[in-house]
Length: 116
Image 1 (tube, rainbow, N blue to C red):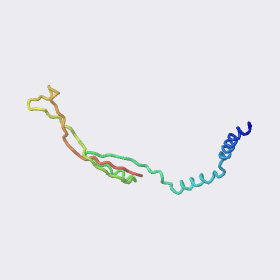
Image 2: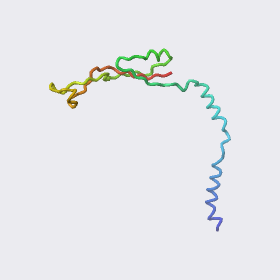
Image 3: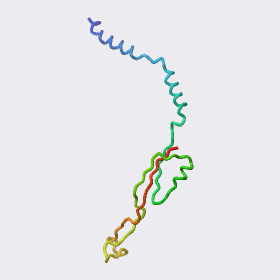
């Protein structure tokens, strides 16, 4: 009777032991991995994002250094700010609460995504 009660546990234990066999074919995945690395020696490329704004342009230095442009984007950017009085009677030096800061010059910011 005790053997009949333990029979399901013995079956489960046997299935568990059978399913935990170590793999005997371990060298093939490593060899395939080494072949893939040798085939693609330049798989790791450097990427960099640079920004030039308000008339600056130094991209030619990077292009001469061997970088390639992957993506170029531009957007409007405020280059300088100026302070103006809020009203005619405002003295900006004495009354700082009447000073308003406004954009003075608006330029373009260029964003480059480079790869080497």
